[in-house]
Image 1 (cartoon, rainbow, N blue to C red):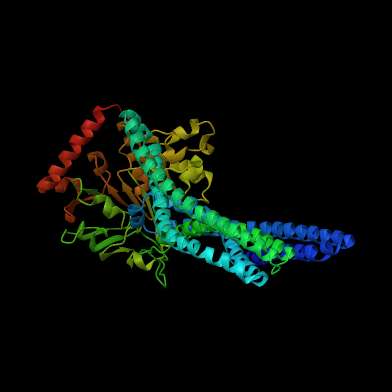
Image 2 (tube, helix red, strand yellow):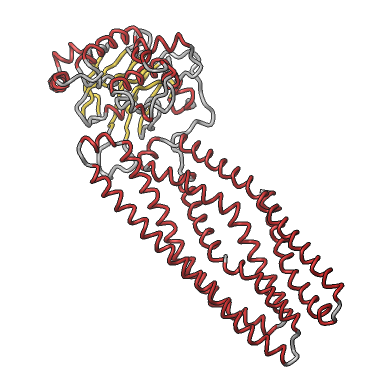
Length: 573
């Protein structure tokens, strides 16, 4: 910021130098030229040239000074924005579209940087220059100066109303840019679906409608700017014309010298750019203010999942996981609707594998999101080795618990980096072991093996390949507790069987909570927990529940029907 202030001083000095030149012209005309002293004319011309060089040098200094701090501030704001996004809970990202976040991180911060480096400096300098310039005009001739002051009144009024209208349009346009970015991102990520269903034209129509809305808003902004430019160009010209006529009359009556008239109009000419650029800088300031508001809408979002003031630690992690009277409901759930999880009581002993089964919508995936604190319970508590997980730092908690999701997400990085995401210091032995357990040996056949870059979200791989890499990632993290949300749904029967054999070896020493959508997955578990309408209604071995629980038999038969239908289709590996 000190560089910004120095840049303001340099720019202000440049403006004062520019305002000084007309005063030299006044002295030149009323003195040497009128007195026919040619020798002083050359000295005056040299002085004007020197002042012009000084002005140009100060402007160059101002440009050099403002470039670095603006980019540094932009980079710092962008880094803090990204860090805050990473820290905010999943519930925040459920509500916000990625396009709106991208537009704030890229477009809005770019606007703020341009305003800091250019708009802020020149806006302040131009305002000071206008006040100083009007003071000089009034000192040269109060009558002519009054003409310019009176002419500025409608310009000021128009600028006031312009600010009100343009601020609304600026916010609308930036929000529409975010919506447009969301439409682009969704169509790119969903390109396979759009092509498969022949809905490209439909997507284009929706995009075109949003683009047309944005176009209309930008046209309205352009009209507002054109209107303020009209006033900023027309009023000074009218004032110039009136002052010229009055000034010539004053010279003819002897009340004003020719040098003073030249100095007056020279000063007024210097003021033209500051006056005429006010509309542009006012619009830029409003855009930057709106961008700043949008930036802080995200930065002011409160993170509800935080570390405790004094974090506990687990000296000897064993992996005992316990749910005590756990309740959960989403923030936007309507009043009167029962909790999605309504009093869950479940104990998973260290080294035990529990399969979680239930009909669609019973809350299985939500329950698995609670141990790593992707969401926080709204009632009750979750204990890890007897410690409430809210009393652990999130970093420590997530070193003890790893997850593999049904919807496997990979990053634009190498296979090695994707698998060792949770254990970046892992060696080749750990990498190879995770690959073997997840039956992901296909990575060795890729062009650069485990160093092959995976495309965006892993879309260059098949669904089964992505799931195997995601499973390898969870295994490579070497957690105490492994949470698996149906991570084998896209695999063929043979591959699934091989993985289950390897997983049994891993699960001998790891606590596991597995969401099961196939009977074959249930058979991997020591016990089964039946989830029904947000409650655990039965816990036991598969055979015991099958013999004694009618709802469990119904759920298992439903899973068997789904598995039979899936296996009748072409396998996905």
